[in-house]
Image 1 (cartoon, one colour):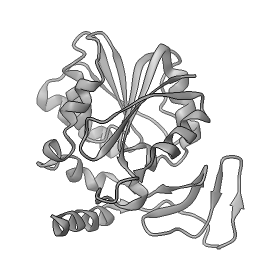
Image 2: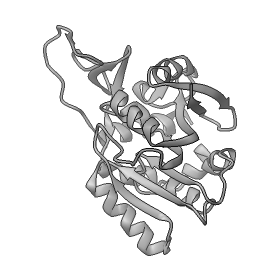
Image 3: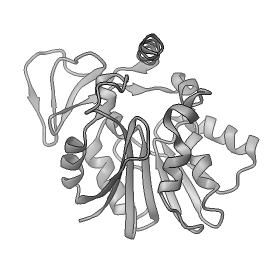
Length: 241
């Protein structure tokens, strides 16, 4: 098992690209971010004390569709825990190939899933999934690194599945997500548990509850609950404070 998990870590390293950062070891300050020499699997860009992780590019789409994902992550349990209404409008931020979007779409037949990604190549893969499966309530949405490009008060729930830690501009992106929430709307994040050394994921692709609460508070969100239903991941539920 250890060998298998280490192999997966090495593979994921190969399919990540690194955000450019200043090569100087001197700390450069900005309003929300600072920069240092990148560490292993990090970008050198820091937000509220956390080094932002390298982004998995579209070249790693196969990782999102790996056959053992259903047993390793148990996403069906995650979707069930969302307790969605059939009419909900859900934004899947960092939707990638649409693996999670498709599961959610089945639960909101009278609503829709806005599948947001910043990579045009991922949007193309999303469109291919929609055409192949004939899903009618998934709407691909090309966002930017600083905005999900969603209208104000337009969504009931925003979900980020193992995506938040890679956001290049987490403050701006989360501010846009919060603005897009309808009254009573929720934000849900799944992140690999940084507190658990047995979770064999690259360090910067894991997060702790303490750090996530700290960052979400900064954009006006408070933790409602952290469901313990997934084998390796936190499942955080936030609402506007």
